[in-house]
Image (tube, rainbow, N blue to C red):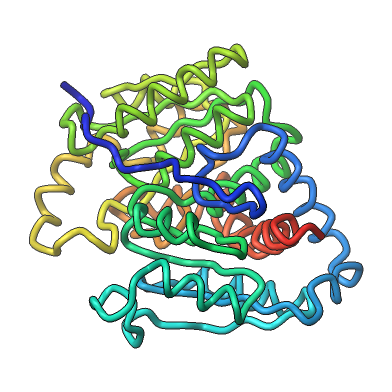
Length: 326
């Protein structure tokens, strides 16, 4: 059996008066495409939005380390005329048995206008959303990374001109937040997605997510497929995507075993030849040359990794504007 049967809670009791971005499972195609269009406008004319969130405050709650998420939200809020506050959860009573999640978010809602949280537990984020009176943005959890994938879709539209009908191939460890969000993002955008990973269930996508996205894709006339052969997954792909083999939560002592298992799914120049000639290469970063991809691919002409990283700024701004009704 290739999938984990027990899945994280991806839905939550919604407060219909407040719109959140907790998982792309909660969004529809129009919402996804609308926020990408808004990001294009924000990117094209920064000055036009320079006071759009004047007087607004964003709290950035971090349980996990970050480079792109922290900087893109902080700088993004500044460029929109608002103010961002960095709040380190390690210095907070949150999660230490001294204050409940519901009390914490209710207090934050009295101070700020919007919250971005980068947390370990997706269920904890869902619990916060259930009690929140302000919009919450998932900056990353163990289950989902929606902001990254919305930024990726923005990058793909810039490079390919559209989304519908394109094929994205994802290679490597596929039981993670990036793969799950890519599955939803591609399915909702009308793209084909092929996941290439080892047959071990520990490296395969969550079965609930996979089956849900298969059904979304069927409605749009596209395919969501799983492959245990890298060349088969990449065949005729427009986009080849990979992610770190050693995520923050993986113990260092597992590194050698993981490399041995995942090596057949490394993106190298030979594998890229099985994709379309004009295929682009993506990695959400951080990336390790010689691991999930070779240096010649990461630094080569098909790589768009730094455009991809920059677009985190523009999509974060569009997300905040959207959730605040601007």
